[in-house]
Length: 219
Image (cartoon, rainbow, N blue to C red; front, side, top):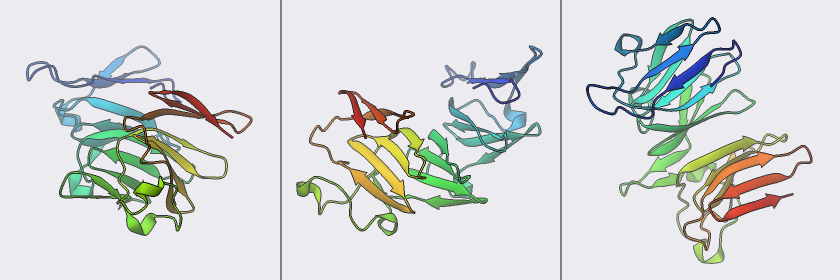
């Protein structure tokens, strides 16, 4: 990630061994390299996954052991102690209202105004159930799945539309968060291995949807 100050942030996927831990650091505009370690809150046991710069110039780093964020050369951590459902963070997305969407292995959380709100509920079987309190009155699923629990699988992509709706690309289709409620577009798709892993809205308002089965557009 290149931030607004011109610094480049880097991290490795995971530790290759106990002798060679995962790395995380940045390259400043003058070419100097800064590495973060255990003394900064990064223990190196979990790899760096997403890196995001928010509207306040804070750098958020998702790792296998939780979330780290960097501000004024200080590193803090947001982990299960703060309510995060699982310490392995795989997706970070900031909306225009200042909310940070966090996908961990066991659920989706929204970090806003200093607090975490669970958007999914874990089940004893390890699935992620969409919070029933956050479902729209009408959801769009296949008729045969109308009475089935609404599970949210891995989130691969996210965009925010001009009207404030947030689209998530997931296994099985698209989940839309609109006016504080979730609605779904064929979450339980007849193609069982459908995976929406890319979303892009162009200047005309067309949304391009990239999936493992091909490319589609929505207008």
